Image 1: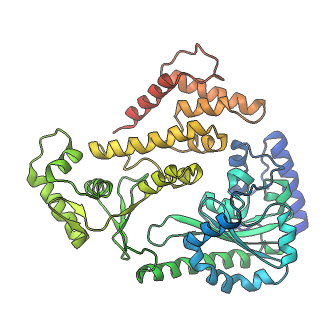
Image 2: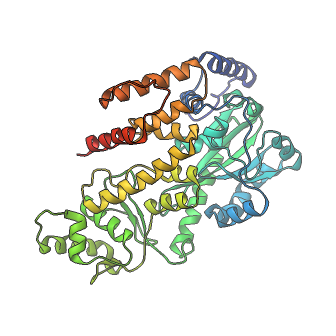
Image 3: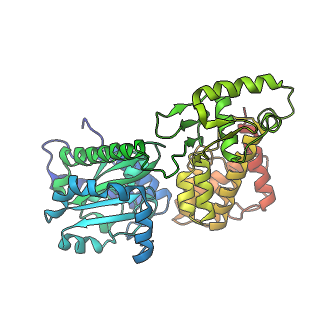
Amino acid sequence: MLNPWLALEAGADAAERTGQVRRAHEEFVTEGAIGAQVRNVVAESWQRCAGASVEPESVARVDLEDAELAAYRSAHPLHRVMPLFRELLGTVADDGAHLLSVCDENGRMLWVEGHSQVRRHAEGMNFVPGARWSERYIGTNAPGTALAVDHAVQIFTAEHYCRPVQAWTCAAAPVHDPRTHRLIGAVDITGGDHLASPQSLALVQATARAAEAYLAELSAAGGTSADGAPVLNALGCDEALLDPGGGTPVRLGRRHSEIMVLLAAHPEGLTGERLALELYGERAVTPVTLRAELSRLRGLLGSLLDSRPYRLRTAAHTDHDAVAQALAEGDLPAALSAYRGPLLPLSEAPGVVRLRRRLEDRLRRALLSSRDPVLLEEWVRTPWGEDDLEMWEALLAGRRGGEARTAALTRRVRELRRSYGLESTQPPSAPRPHTEAGTAHATYRQRSRP
C-alpha cells in the first residue's frame, strides 16, 4: 500500500479484509503475535494498548457531563472553529450514515453530531460528548490514534482494539494551535466500511488544515489571546520556539532560550546581577557579556524586552506553565500530555536547572501518588522516563495483565536496580523505600547531564 495511513488499498474487498484483521486481532489479544497483514500504524497502536493494559471489551468512560461539559468546550479553542467543521463536514454528518466528532488534545469528545439514529447507535459504545477516547482508555481508534501519532489516520473495523467499536470505521486528523504548534484536538468522521477510502482521509485532513488556517487568521487579528501575549515553548527541546505575539515564530539560540525561560518565570523582572547568577552561577562572567546577549535578544524581541529590571513587558504563556497549571487543577492526564520533555534539557544554567527539576519532581510525585498504571506506563515509555526506577517499581506494584506482563516488568526492574548498583534484597514486586529509589532517579538525572 502506497499510503500507510489508509485502511484499504484500491480495489480491496472490505469483507475479506475485515475477516483477516479480525483473526489477526484475536491472535494478538490471546497470544501477543502480530501478523504481517496488520498495518504498522495499527500494530504499533495495539502494542501501546497492550502495554497500557487496555481490556479488549472496554467501553469509553464519560468524564464530563451537562454544565461541566458545556463550560469546558465553550472555553476550548476548537469551539471557535465548530461552525467551520459543520460547514465542511455537515453534509457528511447529516446523511444518516456518518457522525462528525471533535475531541480535545486528551481525547475527550467535545462534540458528536449527525443523524439522531446513528448517534443512538454510537451511544452503545459511549461515543458521546464528554467521553474519553484516547488510546490509553479505549484502545486503537481514529481520533485517539491520530492524537497519539500526530497524523491523520483511518481505522477500519477490527483494527479497533476494543471489540465494541469494531463495527465502525473512522478517519481523523489532528488539529494544532497555529501559534504554539501544540496539539489541541482532532476532527473525525465515523461510519461504515465505505469510509475506508482515500476521499474520507483527504477530507478530514483538509478540514483540519482549514481549521488551523482559520485559527491563524483569528490570531493575526488578536482573536486568540485577549492580551496578545507571546508564547514560549521550551519543553523537550534545547532551543526554545518563541511566538512574539501574532507574528512568525522564532527559534532562539540556547543562551537566548535560557534568558527567555528565566524572564518568563519572573514576570516581576530580574536585575542584571540576579539574571547573571541565574544564567552563569558562580562562574566569573563580566557584566558586558550579559549585556551583549541581551542586546542581541532585544534585536529579536524589540519593545517586548524591557530593562531596569530586565523583564518582558507582556507576560509570556509557556508550555512549562501549562503543565504546572494542569497539575494545580488536578488534571494529571492533561499535565502528562502537555509535558513534552525536560525544560531545555541540555541547559546547565542554575535557574533553568532549578525550574526543570521542580516541574519534573512535581509531575513525578503526582504520577506516583495517582498509582494510575496507564499514566505510569505512558511515563516510562518516554525517553526521559525509560530509566526511572521508581516509576517502574510503582508500575510493577500496581500491575495489570497476565504472567507475561508481570515477568516483563520484573525483568525491567531488576535491570534498572543492577544498573544503579542497588542490591536485590527485596522481591521486585515490592517498591524500594522512596529515598532509595529517589536516589536512583537522581543518579540517572546526574548521568544524563552533558
